[in-house]
Length: 105
Image (tube, rainbow, N blue to C red; front, side, top):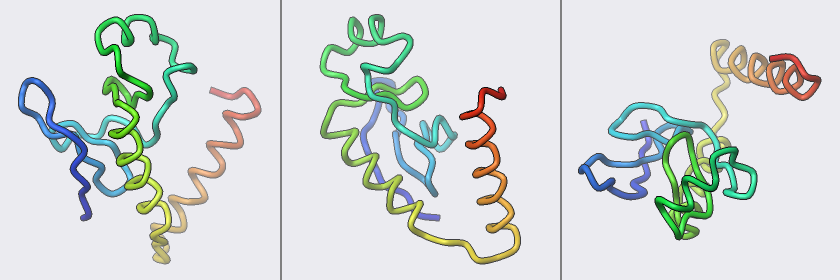
């Protein structure tokens, strides 16, 4: 298990990237970052956290925090699990991405 520390929230929980997931207090939040321009709730987030440029789940990030998180997410994606379970997971993810791109939810 690899973990990259990003920040600590106001209530004292750690925000980390663990095995390709942005985690809050060790619990998975998101597996990708969304630019604030594309976020459906950007106005409320920008009001609460004026310097936010990206979000992962319910976690807003500044540009520096987003860069650290994206680097950790990218590093986790480069690690290839060649076991049958790892290959199955990659195929499952690829099928899901294709299906959602075609409009299936």
